[in-house]
Length: 171
Image (spheres, rainbow, N blue to C red):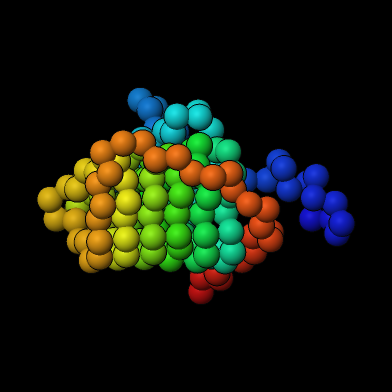
């Protein structure tokens, strides 16, 4: 990377992890990631992936769908996008997204404007306010759930500090 010029970052992927989001007939199968997580495709058609060796601290905000299989701490603001927390995902954040799907662990306040799905492998701690909720048998939930019955509107995301990304070394 060049200092002072982030144009080189636009073409670099966020993660070197396998592509769990582009599942199809010719995709590779991974026993560590449930088939439902591998086949997640958000409504925007573009999904950013945060691999399991990545640790993000700060605010994650954007216009595309996000798949998190790493660790994120802070705030997630994706009011027009879908968020999936993968089976290895560990998120400690206040979250605003259109749709939230949880396979991993989440601690914080969650405000999906359309729906949240909490799968059997998930552990959720905190507050959920949503118009619609799906909880699979076996999921663990500690906290408060408010099912509001109507879509929620969020104010526009505020300007935030840049996100800090560091990769954990293995070995």
